[in-house]
Length: 173
Ligand code: HEM
Ligand code: HEM
Image (cartoon, rainbow, N blue to C red; front, side, top):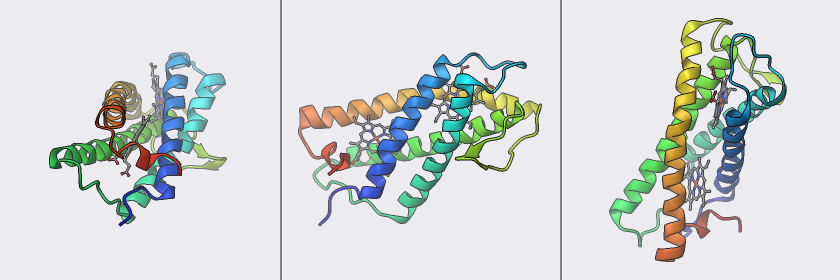
């Protein structure tokens, strides 16, 4: 019986890791966004990469909902439950974050595109609620960081202390 992740899920996993890590770094180093901020430099990079993250997370969730991944039967029930809950929380949190970031970008008058293809505007330039969405987006960055740390510590613990197949089954090959 297959115990691993399919190739598509692995590709999504590591692309999401790379792009979300890049978004985190760019978001931290870009200038604070104010009324007069222009969409240039790191701000432009954040919105451009944002379009890529939107595409990736929607495609990854759609793929995952239609493709079952077998769980490792040797793991205790509570660990399987904790892993499943964390994984769906990560997918859901990133989805919420990208939608809020998208609306916040629109409220600053910046369209969001996926490789040049414009996405519909979720908010109008100057919309108050979408401005608040930007604040919530910024707050959720910390929640995401906490969840990712938990996830990575669990993966490394399984690999180096429990010495099971949890980490290797998501690695390439
Ligand atoms: C999950 C991936 C993402 C991460 C980790 C992330 C991270 C961040 C960080 C760290 C900030 C800086 C907050 C500060 O000022 O200290 C930020 C702000 C912002 N991000 Fe993202 N971001 C992500 C996805 C997106 C997407 C998809 C978009 C839209 C296409 C976006 C649009 C924005 C905007 C407009 C702001 C400014 C918010 C404001 O101050 O009004 N982000 N993001
Ligand atoms: C931004 C960073 C990351 C995010 C958002 C993330 C998200 C996810 C998600 C959503 C899953 C579930 C996949 C599915 O079942 O559809 C998953 C699985 C997994 N991730 Fe990550 N991940 C990140 C970084 C990492 C890193 C750096 C490692 C390794 C050190 C890692 C190791 C794993 C492992 C081992 C699994 C499979 C767990 C199992 O079989 O139960 N992840 N990740």
